[in-house]
Image 1 (cartoon, helix red, strand yellow):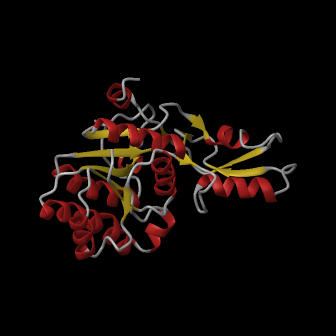
Image 2 (image 1 turned 45 degrees about the vertical axis):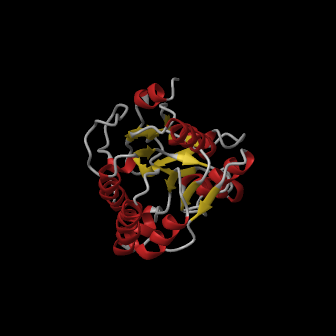
Amino acid sequence: MNNIGITGSTGVLGRILIEKLEKGRIEYQCFKGDIRHKDNLKDWIKDNNFKSVIHFAAIVPTTEVKQNPDKARDVNVRGTKNLIEAIEDSKQNPWIFYASTCHVYKSKNKPISENDEIEPISIYGKTKYDAEKFVTRYGNSCIGRIFSFYHDSQKKPFLYPNIMDRLKNENLTKSFELYGANSVRDFLNAEEIVDIIIELMEKKAKGIYNIASGNGIKIKDFVQKLTDKKLTIKEKGDNDYIVADITKLNKVLNR
């Protein structure tokens, strides 16, 4: 696994990956430039003979994507295209992992498999799916469609840090308003997400894989597990169901 290139190294998954690689004394190089600038990527690839490249760099918060969709497309789609082309131009053939999202799928009321209908549920999902096409073009690649994850290092506006802040600062003897309280999600700790990515890298797995727990939980139940105090949850908004079928992942990882 030695000599791994990482984009998006300052994000939650990137930081966790680096910690794990350092514990394993595995060599890595982080891309410090702007993936919208292809020349920077070409120099980075040329100067390093990577065995693997983990591509995390993206604009992720859906609120930020909605506020500036052109920038999000520029980073998420064109940046990925630049990375693939920089690798192709180098004549090197590293294995590539691309961090995609469950937002590419059409919502349904049972677990979603990799072959299910594609209908991005957000602008963010559309940018990630469009970027997937460039990764797929490069044969030595693996696309991980990551479902919901949480970690203590996450920042707002993501669900977990937002809920933790509310649990800390609100009067929990009063009703706790929760949007989409009965929505079902597939949560996995970010540490486990990165462990799965490392396993996929070790096996040089190719193709598309859902990365998740394979188990659904209502958001209100997930929130209740974060505190010892009994919450009186007031449900707001619509509900949906986004849970992964991880049969394909389990098969490649021999689970």
